[in-house]
Amino acid sequence: MMDFQILYDLDIFTHEADSSSVYERIHRFTLTTGGKEALQRRMRHPFFDYEYVCRAQQTILFCMQRLDEWKTSFHPQEIKYIEEYFHSNITPLDPQAGWWARVWYIMRYGADYAFIEGSIRRLGAFIGKLLHFVRMHAHHHAAETLDDLHRVCSTLYADESKGWLARAGNSDLNSNQLFYLDYFIRSVHRKEFQFILDGFYELDAWFAMAQATVEYRLVMPHISSPGEPLEIKGLYHLFLPHAVRNDLYMSNRHHLIFLTGPNMAGKSTFLKAAGICVYLAHLGMGVPAESASVPVFDDLFTDIYITDKIEEGYSYFFNEVRRIRQLAEQMRAGKRMFVLIDEMFRGTNVQDAFDCSLAVIERLGAFRNTYILFASHLVELAHALEKKSDIRFYYFDATVENQQPRFSYQKKEGISELRLGKLILEQQQVLKLLSLGQDTTG
Image (cartoon, rainbow, N blue to C red; front, side, top):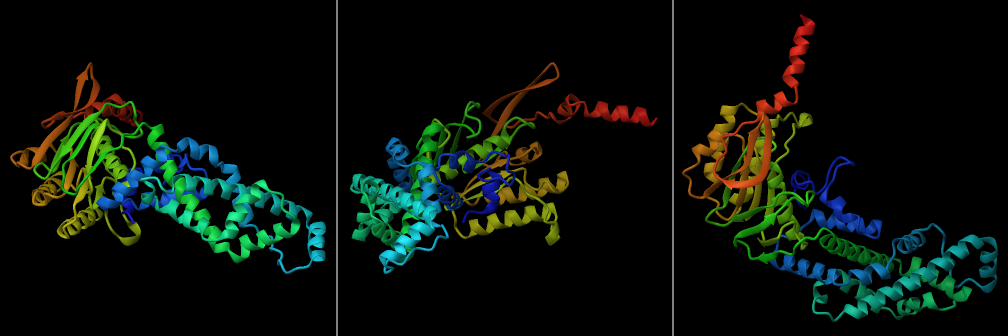
């Protein structure tokens, strides 16, 4: 499972119900609650193996070509009705029961019988459509990558009685057949039918990722082997489709990028945009960019939002140190990492942060198989590292016009000396309000 810190740093998931997340933007395309849960599991476990990432991408491309067929074949209300039937607490009638028991059941529990009858017809139609979908695509060149589709297919073909059930949606069934099928579905072969539903949920998740790729106009990246350069043209944040776009290039030769620039200039947004792009590529999805070539990494790592752990007695700074230690351990183990660090060691004084950051960054240079994006307000730190040949320095530009900051959100080569903190403080009239407070107390 992917580190929870990464998932929340990049807003893949959020703690707040009203906050936007990558998951929320994809799960809206699922048909079922089970599909949402399958999608959540998949997004917590992206692939970090070259073959698996390529297969996932082929799967999503396969689904993208069949979105219309998927959406017209299966409907949320239909699946919900089947789920309610499958998980209902109505006890199936034993098929060995005589005709009088069946008549008595229909007379005594007429509403339950009507529910069972309607459900089996819906289930029969559903199985029929699923069988058709599987048969249509079982021999497609990409079908071998669709493990979930194969699971459903093999389950449906395994037992002739399921084929008979598939015809129930278009046939008249007598009460004896209905009671038999109900017992067959919810008692004898309950596990198999749960397996079919679970397989459908997995497909639902795949098609949701395909739909999101189309709806958000994401671009399928070229997936390259581990150690190859990372090259992204026209990168933008998924939540800001009309934002200014920037390029990103990293390689073993230039594997560390140091970003500077004033507050609100775009450093953190760029870090997150890059992280989401690499993350989505490892899911097999399209990415928010004009084009991209993404190598497969062994893992992602972020150090963006760190909090105190009061219950454990750990300070903010100590948690920062622990987080960097986790990175060091993974790098020492030989992992190829994609790393995003936003303002290292914020929990201590400026000199301490400078000394600690300098010591860490100088040692990061030795791990050329790890690509690192580092953002900081400490211009002095950037200058101290200026002569390092493996570090490239960029900044996000800003100007001041009539005491108003203007941001271009363009990444430029070099180091920014601009500081806007005091100006923004004055612009928000914080100092004026505090001065008024002094007058009042006086």
